[in-house]
Length: 386
Ligand SMILES: *[C@@H]1O[C@H](CO)[C@@H](O)[C@H](O)[C@H]1NC(C)=O
Ligand SMILES: *[C@@H]1O[C@H](CO)[C@@H](O)[C@H](O)[C@H]1NC(C)=O
Ligand SMILES: *[C@@H]1O[C@H](CO)[C@@H](O)[C@H](O)[C@H]1NC(C)=O
Image (cartoon, rainbow, N blue to C red; front, side, top):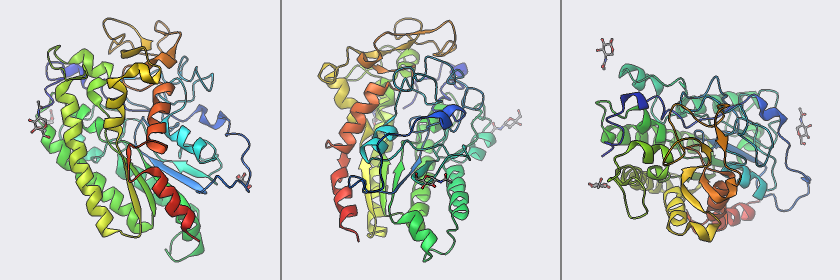
């Protein structure tokens, strides 16, 4: 598996991409019309974790991964915020649609220390891996400039808890931090595979190490007291223009994407799901939802027009044939332009998705049947709590 990039050693640091930022996010508007009495607000807080698919501003052009070094430039943010916010999209991400659906403001990035953390914090950081950074250094694979892993995010979460005065789990401060909080654990692991492409480290090794590390992380959250947890699977990474550009053209599956890469993320997800079942046994007081990003994306690819998409494979913002993507000339570079109709595109910059696609995925998770158990079940459980 994962022979995808083996002939392109230079592509390694490009994949290094799953990313995002923090400079401008303090300028983001919070969603309007939120009142303390809002009955449609089952959670008081959200804590989010993950990589660039979830990051609302913990990195920027200079601090994020190598592949997308213009994220602080227009046209990032053009559709919704009308300026770059260091989100890797033209607008809102799944986590933003989730916050809105729960009548909460957009989550501030952890690294924005001035932000008001009353409604939660986003610890997701672009380029982040599931496996500890030291592993990549040891294997001479530290071309990425994003040293953060999911363990870093746990460290940040611990610091946050301390700052809230939460030390003893029985204390009011800890109850305040955990009881009414939703833990949204965004997709993580895509970078682990990307950083090791073309190396001697096998996909099987990455799967084992990444899932072990990620499972430990989830256990850590649950032991500390997380009660409502959503875990996102890996998406169909073989459908991203980056993968389509680098893979041989005969490596394709029934939806036209890169077969070996989609198979790899599917194989990862199968193991992840079994770990999630184990955790449900270990922590029966918690509800752990599996959000099936792989099948959400696949469903859209099967009938894109049903969701308003006219372009499934090309990036909206980019340059070059056939996928409007060139590894060394990506979105945000002044010479690169965006399409005029991002809502008709699934992909934004070659790796990250358009706001329109994130909205479709968020709807599938929140209102559709791509969560197991359904997100509605988690909400009902929360509403039954005193
Ligand atoms: C943060 O926001 C909450 C809710 O709007 C408000 O009550 C609180 O005073 C704010 N905290 C600070 C430090 O501004
Ligand atoms: C990493 O690079 C160093 C210096 O080039 C070399 O000595 C070492 O053997 C390499 N390690 C691995 C795991 O390839
Ligand atoms: C797909 O993944 C499975 C493991 O889930 C593996 O056994 C199979 O060989 C893979 N097939 C391809 C075409 O990569």
